[in-house]
Amino acid sequence: MVRGARRPKSDFRACLEPLHTLQISWRCGRTGMGTLVDIQRGQSLLQPSFLLDGLELLAIASRLFQEGDPHGFGETTVALTLLAEQGQQQGLMAAVWYLLDVAGWLGDLSHCWQCGREAEQTMFWQHARLVCDDCGQGMPVSVGLRKSITAVLSGGHILLGAADAGRWRDMISGVLNEHGIKVTDSFKGM
Image 1 (cartoon, rainbow, N blue to C red):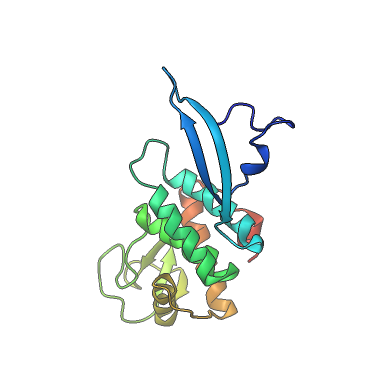
Image 2 (cartoon, rainbow, N blue to C red):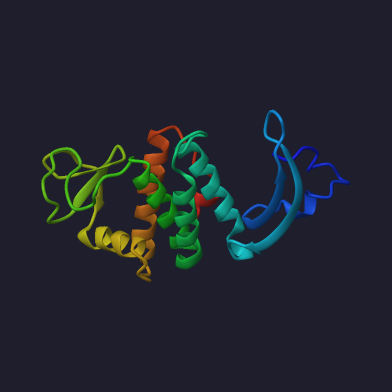
C-alpha cells in the first residue's frame, strides 16, 4: 500500500503500473506497515497485448488464494509464465486451469473424479467434474483433449482446434461458476 499514490501529483503514480517488476525501498514504521521511500519500475511481466488477460488472471487468483494464505504468490507467478509462453488463447486457459488445479478444485484427467475408474475413452464433464459414463453424462471430453490439456500445461506448444479450445474454455467456466466466480465476457469470447 502506498499512501497518496493515486493522487495526480504523486511521485509514485507512474511507477505503479500493474504486472511490472518493482524495486522498492521501504522504511519500517513503529507500528503498522511503514513508509514507501522509493520505487523503480522494471520490465513488464507480459507483452502489452496480454496485459488484460494478466489482470483477469490476477482477479481469479485473488479469489482462489485469500490474503494471509501461505501460498498463492508463487502459483500466480507460474500462471503468468504459462500465459506469456502459451499465447493469448491457450495461455489464459492453461494459466487458469493451473491455478484451479493447485487450489485443489480439479482432479487428474486420467480417471473419473467420482468413482476413480481409469479414463480409457471419452469421459464427460458434468457439474464441473470429469465423470465416466457409469457416473453420469454431460459434455463429452475426448482422450485427445485430455492429452492436449496435459501437454499444454507441461509447456508443450500444442495448437488446439476451435472445438477443443471451446470445450476447454467451457470446462473452466463451469468450475469457476460452480464456485461462484463470475467469468468475464472476454474469457467467454476467446
